Image (cartoon, rainbow, N blue to C red; front, side, top):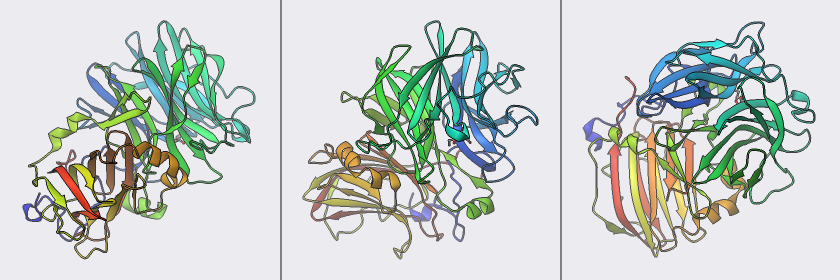
Length: 483
Ligand code: FRU
């Protein structure tokens, strides 16, 4: 934990490759796919280009885990078939097990269609259906001139199987389309489940194309997660959700909400595990340019798995999975204290690029706090998380389209929290990944690429008055990969 302990990065080396987040051995990764808990094992598939760190010739990679913490790489699950409906790539989709038979529903391109493959019992071998594509394109009026129609998400309710697809209406907004089937082969189009309105900016602008829909039951309600995209702007890529009720034909949604405020998590996928937990994993996009990604030889990381629950106010509560605690080393626990502006940094003895921090802070006059991570001793390098108690926002000190586009939303989610009440921050630092959970309500994930080998410091500062540090725990985190 202390700089001298050897837990920090080795001097002279800057390693941006995460040590306790999931990522493939090499190459490109984007969305999680086919996330499922089967016979006590979690299976995670993912959009993968094994040939290089760029998005092309997309395969489905596969890994499995008993605890969602340590992962074992498995053979490639899906490879594009020359001349087949997926010759342009095996894009995103989901997995189900029907009468003991594992099935993958995925997007064949191009054009975008729904394809299927059936798996061996261990989910290691997959056979594509001779009948592919099962659905050859969007219903009339959807998909625009690019035929956007992708990311089948399949689930069962009673005797009926359902599928939602991501799509759009040309010149208008995103769309989620609903299908149903009795035999998992013939799919009947039911109708649009939900249509976005790009003219509406409040409470959240939902873009012009919806990707990767997930619909699942939670606490007697249903949650629809959608990834909002807008190519005209390029930078609009973030997941949102609607809490509502699904009756087998229609969905009555509540207000759209932002699922992640950090600006780098996208295309999340939820699975309900054997204990009934709704577990979410999402793609943490890179923040460096394409040339740097190719040079590194890898691109894309999965978020830590997160458990979702529903609050009384019908918004999601989001927590990192408790299983992560097994990666913790010896804790560093400074005594509770009042931190004044200009006082010595209470975390000056902490350092490292693989850490978990659990902080409980209450303003006692402070108008803001700043938490610096991956900070170099000279102050030139590092990232700052700043919480503003007067306005009620929390953000990283970097351009962030999600927070910038939705300041009111962000403030509304956070504002009820810090005013005189403790703010609990759970922070995970893993080389180039930072994930922050604020009072289980707001999550911000970002990417940061230290420029110096000594960018390992952690610093907590109070502004404008005293900050009560009710509790601090810091742990070095162990790697899940051999390094
Ligand atoms: C989301 C997405 C999906 C698509 C996949 C292609 O990031 O664009 O809609 O299926 O990635 O890799």
